[in-house]
Figure 1: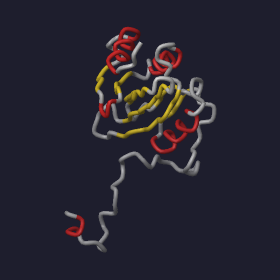
Figure 2: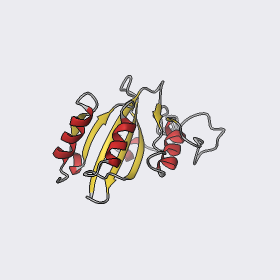
Figure 3: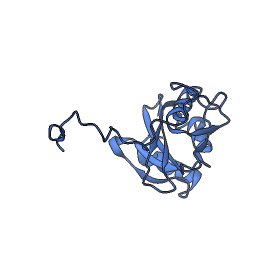
Figure 4: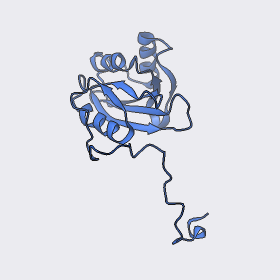
Length: 168
């Protein structure tokens, strides 16, 4: 089977249904789609185990915060790679900020351990089943998650700069 975005998407929809694989598009030639947290483990396990796909490398896990998207404020983006076929996928899962819980991928990809710890540290994602979900870069006593867009990027009371120098 030739791995094209259309072939892979068709195979995934046939396996999981259109209600589980949606919002598919191809930015930069990488098949990108959204799924639900209930399906993410089965989907990634299928990609890993399927003899035609062999998507057995987790490249990246990245948290994204969309504070204006009610009920979908947090997104976990997974980038996967089939080294055998040199094919990449990007999968997104959106969750509400009040319930930032996702299942761990550490049972499939050992590298998910550190990536999940980073997402917990910076965004507050909680990965159920993770073997050691503690902060990785910030101090444990920190009571907030610094990558959430809850704070202004700069001090609004600063008087030591002139806005016209910054195009404002």
